[in-house]
Length: 361
Image 1 (cartoon, rainbow, N blue to C red):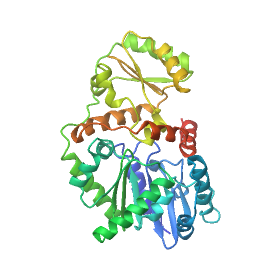
Image 2 (image 1 turned 180 degrees about the horizontal axis):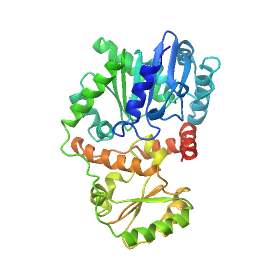
Image 3 (image 1 turned 60 degrees about the vertical axis):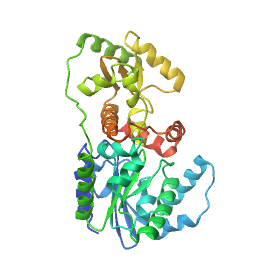
Image 4 (image 1 turned 120 degrees about the horizontal axis):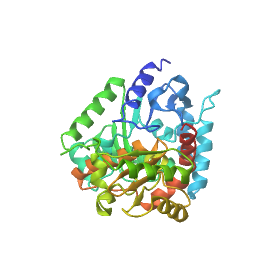
């Protein structure tokens, strides 16, 4: 099969930070009984044929006839083993965790992305109502555990949606996650994404402002040096107009104080560290480690700026700020629940993604 159209659209969206950051998002194509789906650990922006796994759609469908453990860890281990067994002979790569979801969507092409503009709705207090108002034919799925549970919920909702409307849902909004788009052609995918982005943009009062600002370079440099000595890794610093607004005091920081999506947890940590002006960032960092068993990847210092342990957390925290800004138009921000955050932190799939992300640094 010619995968060039799938590779082309994957690279186009994957190289556009308005749609994809780092390893986020996945794509697929179906032909006959074969699903070509993105392999875990491959970035969309540079993907080629080796970045897709061939899977047997009939075998994937048989997964729904099985009974799995009620224990989260055991269930996901069992499902992963069955998914790996659905690969065609000769395949060795690990399929995307969302391969099951791609398989159940009755479209030749499926493109799943996490645009900040879209997540301004999916990570907002009025996400369901806004989706219903702006996209009445779309399917809204509330926050549920990713992997098998998410695929099962979507599968059930697709049936209900078709019974009610007479058609398959080609547009799915997932709370605190992102968007799935399905179509029979690349042009159909592009048309839906263009419509979605234009419709949301027309409902947004302002864009996030990441223009650089003046800052205390001596103080920032001293903190950067001290943090690097503490964590044993490169620390980056950023200061901009949006960060200045969020870092005025803790009340202003609250809209960016936790995790909006699984990607934020994987790449930027489950929670940024807030450092009040006058407090020692290194001592605060140590206290964070003692409390949570791991170091913060983002350290926000009041009235100064953002420190990032390594280069990958910083674009995801910018994404957090962008989502918080967009969510202002839809009732304000809505983070993942503490229970869901803990599930993601301990989930084998996301530990695997975190390991891959760290090895690529």
